[in-house]
Length: 104
Image 1 (cartoon, one colour):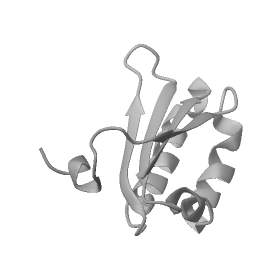
Image 2 (image 1 turned 120 degrees about the horizontal axis):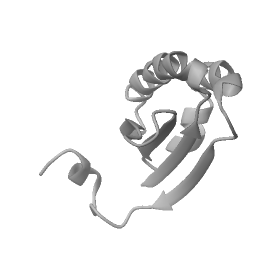
Image 3 (image 1 turned 180 degrees about the vertical axis):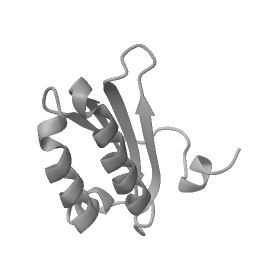
Image 4 (image 1 turned 60 degrees about the vertical axis):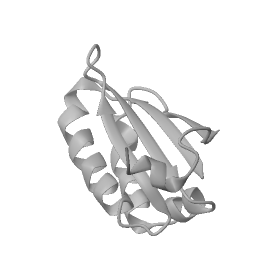
């Protein structure tokens, strides 16, 4: 599994539009066969700071970036960002398996 964590800072006047566009992208991403999880979070301390936590099977990140909904999201939100988004890939340590993301 690959985990991709993205931090996004949005211009205040674009916050609502960013949320709407990102929810559409998140919902479509969850339908992808290689996506295991997609969390869309907003900072309590800074309402213009967001965090995307995405979990994919091997090859899933590249497959995701090739989808029309991701390309639409990327283009739609580009001018909404206060600065370039910061994305970091991670290897999974825990839970040890894909099933651990959906069960207790």
